[in-house]
Picture 1: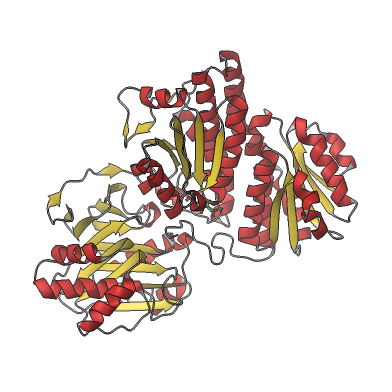
Picture 2: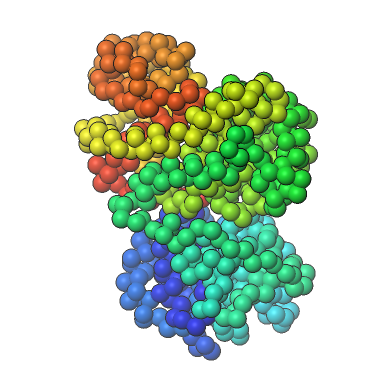
Length: 623
Ligand code: M6R
């Protein structure tokens, strides 16, 4: 989705803006632009289609655009095709107001008509141009301050936005506002920064402020003043970001995805450390309503103890983690779990049971559907627990309880380390519910925790043997259709393995519950169709193996993924991959690693843009 940046301070703005935009490239975009002010002089706007490099070349790496106050944008087209005209920043006809926007203004047609009646003309197809001209309209109509003008406009705008705006009569100032779209503000001795996401500003500062929904900010080189919708000043706490600048760099890896695959042992260790006291799962540091609960986890423990049902809602890979979570929680407790895609849940009028909890899983904490699903749960009085990676994100701030996954910034669009950290968090949740509801005794908890602690080491071992997967990927890079099959947790692993493959290598792949093959899919199997069978669950091993034999007899080429010890698989499959043994309930954490590597190496072999696959955005902040 779109990314916005801004800077006002002692230094030249354009190079800082370009650098910030580069850090937001992972969000996905089709065009980019910057607007820079040089004191009282007119604002310079430069835009370019395609990669940021073009914008950098057009501005001589930013050196050709002078000024110490500016805003920038990477656009992921929603209203209007990708084009230079539709690229941001947008401006009013007399350049009185210039701005960038992330989000969707739902009533932009109606507002456009209103403005047309007041002699406004439009050069683009974007909702953003309408928003900027609406602000200009109110600024002139009431002759008030920029804050007044923006507030008037926000009252009329329906939809979501993160807006950054500059006014001709206020040089050296940037005004920002947000609703349901991410924005972070940072401060250092060199000035004030804004970005859609932490990586955009991390190089310059770790002292940040989170601006709330329907709030405004005025940025000057001295600092930030916040306002509510009435225009009254409000106070905000400064927060220190714990991520370091290196965590948003490739550190010698060819792609962020490979770096993040290798960071999984650390992400798991850090996440576990937070909720494990050495012998038991400890929720005393779990956040309640944005702060560590004073009662040391008593409230969440009380909710979990009385649970009659759990609803897990999420999108994409986070949903796949949820499918694993369902299997694990139901295996360790007597609580039934329902897993829903957030985009379905929010519109299906879900019948939520009284003693239940809605668990929302999201790396970014900004996914529009997941956020809407969580708000629906709130409206119905059901407690919500968010499993989130990005500190201070909207979902984290609005959830009743938050468990942070400590994966650090994830830049590659294809998630790896955040998914792995989500799995660990769900295991810890399952163990805690099992402890509280009495289905797990101390010995079993000890056994589970010991197995969990070994997972990072086992992942290291799998990564040590990655060249074998690389070799296989090079051989199969021309595959057209790939099928993943498995049962139970193995099916859930297949869902994620298949997504990893298709989203970055563009090879069509599907995951099927192995027992479903005979109900249609098997007709797609031809000579040499690649079928990846996942067989980590002892009770289901033979069942899935016989499904593999069925497809082999129809010509399929078999890739078998199982745990060390199941060597009988060699009689069936053409290519066997083994992962270290672990308790079967935790097998997803190991079996997913070769599949992440496979997706990665296929994309590399095909020469695809691994970290920024076409049409995809890292954080999906629109429906
Ligand atoms: O930020 P979220 O976890 O809410 O994102 C959900 C999905 O958009 C995300 O998992 C997506 O499927 C990934 N690109 C998959 O690798």
